[in-house]
Length: 248
Image (cartoon, rainbow, N blue to C red):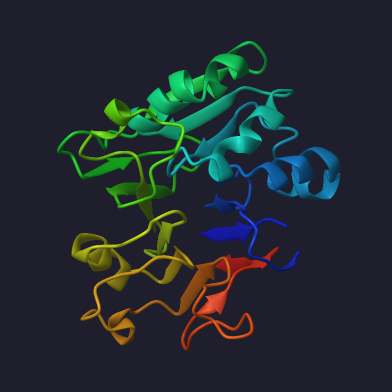
């Protein structure tokens, strides 16, 4: 399993995670505006993840935050988009921030529902482009997009998710939570068994959960954490950098 954080140099900007099982096809986790612009302007970056020749481009959304979805409209020219998201995220991007109706008039969007909603806090799903990887979505506590009306935020789950990914061939595991504000014990159970952990620099977790219990050999903070001194990561963590590559 390969993972790329697109762009180059330490950064606190929002980006994406690019996942692949064999290196032939790639799936992006979220789509920030600055990354979409680079995919359009930088042929090397676009070719690297195989989007130019792909019949379908695949994206998994962890939430509907503007910083994670603003780049979708920049992908309007090209092949259709296979979009994987929860019902709450699809609802937000269809009504409150109507990105999807606009894209339907250009490249087209194929909806793939991640069934985390209501009382369902955890669900497995498959990404067609990556048959060797198994995905699990976990409801997390994330910031509510300010553009949502109050009645749209009452769902028990689905506005923010983390994803746990397992390579069926190697058994290697990845835990990725780009927008989570706080992680609970359920998510931490998945993190403990992960070989690589990618979490937001602002994310917190219970104080009685020692990071020494995590078996991950790579622990990466996405964005410079506010507690870091001089941009340095806490002990045991790496700060994400543009263009970072992780092979598992």
